[in-house]
Each structure stands twice: as structure tokens, then as C-alpha cells.
Length: 88
Image (tube, rainbow, N blue to C red):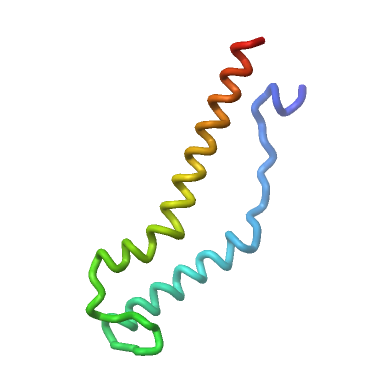
């Protein structure tokens, strides 16, 4: 039997990007944020007077906007597939 029928999938190894770079980036960002806020490291660029709105505005465009566009694209693709199945 082929894998499509049985539902079995081969487990793929994690890419080095996901395995090492992403966690390392999260740790580096966390250290920079804590150092900027608590220890007033000026080289981090973190301003202790930043408010929640400043962070939301910073994260809105690079994360929320692409996620919204991907959701609309997936929804449109799903609608096209359902219309294609209805015609058959």
C-alpha cells in the first residue's frame, strides 16, 4: 500500500534554521530586551519608556499583516477548490 492510503508519513529532520537559528534568535532577543529595560544597555536600542502600543506597532506590520494575507489567500484557494469540485 502506498503512503497516501495508509496515512503514514515519513518524519523529516528539522532544518538547521528551525533547530538552531530560531531558538538562538529568541534567546538573543530576550537578552537584549532584558538588558535594555533592566540594565539600561543603550546599545540595544530599547527605550525603557516604551509602552505596549510601541511594541504592538513594531510587531503589527511584519507579523500580523503577512499572517492576515496568508489567511485570505488560503481561504480564496479553498473556495476555488470547492467550486471546482462542485462543477465535476
